[in-house]
Amino acid sequence: ALVAVQSGDLVDDGTALLPFEWSGVELYASGAAEVRVAIDLDEAVNTVRVTVVDPAGRPVIRAEGLRLREATAEQVRTNESAEHV
Image 1: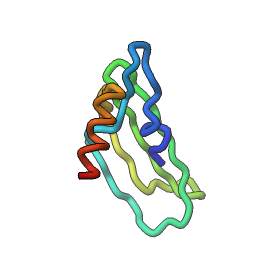
Image 2: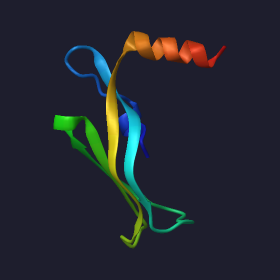
Image 3: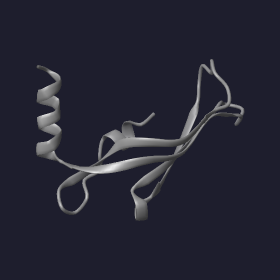
């Protein structure tokens, strides 16, 4: 569900905003075979709110905040190289 966030839309200076820290996460239900996800960006604080509901609109998970952190392409490449060692 976070592919839209993980794709890291580039900002003007060539950095990407990547998922970093969750806050206010609540699980309401488990076992849903299908879900719908809404992601709302608050650009002022580089945070997204994530709401997940089942097909009937009942809440499954809610996260008040997923803080995004800026990263350059070089930082991402360095991190990927370190993971493969």
